[in-house]
Image: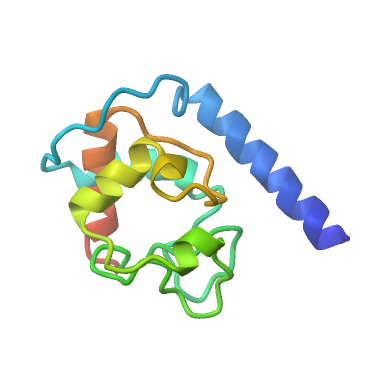
Amino acid sequence: MRALDRRRTLLVAALLWSLLLGIGIAVPAAGAHAEGDAAAGAKVFMTCAMCHSLDPQVRNIGPHLCGVVGRRIGGVIGYRYSKSLARASGVWTEALLDEFLVNPRKMFSATRMVTRVPNNRDRADLIAYLKSPRP
């Protein structure tokens, strides 16, 4: 029961944090993928870090995002994905991530991901950060 309470608390915190930052309030149509700034993307990632890690050894509410660009959708071994993501085929491309981040549930209706990144520049920066090499 404690694990469920912790997850619920973290999920509520992520929702509140995303609302505080203005992420997930207004959702414009997905834009064409643009090159982003990885340093600016690190700031955007702070919201993601409520549920995701960049370290594949760290377990969190969401799957780790290390190497997500080019990885099979639903491909983190040991993470229990929603049915829609577990059954998905293909790999995460920059364009697909861009579309997903606008409205995750539009793409995968049963996803547990609730945070949206409606701003085109923020998405481009975030994707650039996720692609950047890790020390």
